Amino acid sequence: MSKKELERKIGQLLVAGFDGTTVSPKIKKLIHDYHVGSIILFSRNIGEPEEVLQLTSDLQKEAKKAGYEKPLLICLDQENGVVSRIHKGLTSFPGSMALGATDNPQYAYKIGLATGKELKALGINWNLAPVLDVNNNSDNPVIGVRSFGEDAEKVAAFGEAMMKGLQDAGVMTSLKHFPGHGDTNVDSHLDLPVISHEVERLENIELVPFKACIEAGADSVMAAHVYFPAIESEENTPATLSKRVYVDLLREKLGFTGAITTDCMEMKAISNSIGTEKGAVKALQAGTDFVMISHTHAVQEGAIQEIASAVENGELSLSRIEESIQRIQLLKEKYTSWGDPRFPEAKGALQVVGSQKHHQLAQTVYRESVTIVHNHQLLPLNKEKQPKIFVLEPLQGARMQVEDNKGNHKSLGSAVREYIPDAPVEVYDLNKLEKAVEGITARATNYDYIILGTLTVTEHSPVITLVNQLLKENKKIIGVGMRNPYDFHFLQKAQAFINAYEFSYPALQIAAGAIFGEEEAKGTLPVNI
Image (cartoon, rainbow, N blue to C red):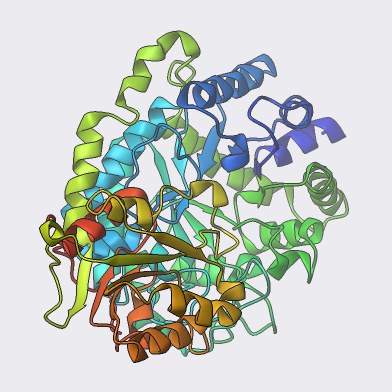
């Protein structure tokens, strides 16, 4: 076999990202020189729906031109809620914990189906969802509201429903982050988390949703950059690089026969230890099928070269590569065909994207999810009496590496002003809030009610100081959690607290409506606080 043939086999296992909203020279090179099998998109690749469709169509045209037997798999993280790569034109659907708050898995199916239809219309055939992590650690910096909740059986039911919905729309799915990223207090984008639970505990909690979804016909499973000492004896070896996780646990014990993908190998849990290129080799040796390298072209090429060298010197068998190609080809047969990617001339396909029907579905689910956590005889406020309201909301920005700043929508203040048009709104910067408490308190003097938006309050947060100061001034505080419901744990002195689970505008509209009795927030907390 020539080196070029070998590199093209290896390329089929790569999930590669690139910059820009058009086909870049670098991704074109990966397609033509290495036959890279899958593409991952981020918000940096996303324009208007017509532009996304043009991009995915052009990528498929390049693959066809390069002589591909089957089309590209094109994926992204459209979990909905706080992790969504596409915002322009797409329906704003509720994320996982918001769905969990409805206590109705059928909504997860409907949202999965609608999400899948919109992605498919844009030429995207693989969604890196659902998240099956059981969020039983309130300090988790990377999962939180990306999880359906803290109960393993509930996560299993909602995860399976979401998976089935996406699949029924013709979109491939990935269960993540195996064998569970829920009970961590470290972000694997930044370092290597360790989960030290015994195998019995993992079987009773973390593995429950994965087992259920595998039995229900999972397409692929994404491994976590998390070290599990009870499973892997080699110190500080994350699941992504562990044969015991891939083969002994996932394949043999849980009976999974689909494809396995790594999480991005440029995350620091890998890049700062073994390194991305050598990590790619070790992941394949361990049993992964897809190797995800989301960002850097030189690293993508370097990984292909490193894998080729490992095959040539006998560290990695060619049969191991071919096993993975077979699994990937089976998925491509199921989810792709050359007649399927919708080329620009089929513009009618875009009518489903952001459709009125999907918008109404999303609104229904948001009403069932937004939760009145606490109400000490304060709500609803009577807007006809024009209550004197001061809105304080956080400077919106990504709190997790996996989030996109581009996803920020209209503010809580905008939602409140739909009811009280002249309500003053002040945006606070959490990093500067400690010094601003006195000034904010002074400016709040003339107002009776403070609507305070929060984005992840921690034990030593200056938000707590602000609340205490406002209460000293006899202000009535209505907290609106714009992400984690755990914020209420630190704001129990507030007279009312509503959780929206995310800062997408439809969720904030329902929260604001609930404050004034114009919306019935019907959600129930999917976690204990």
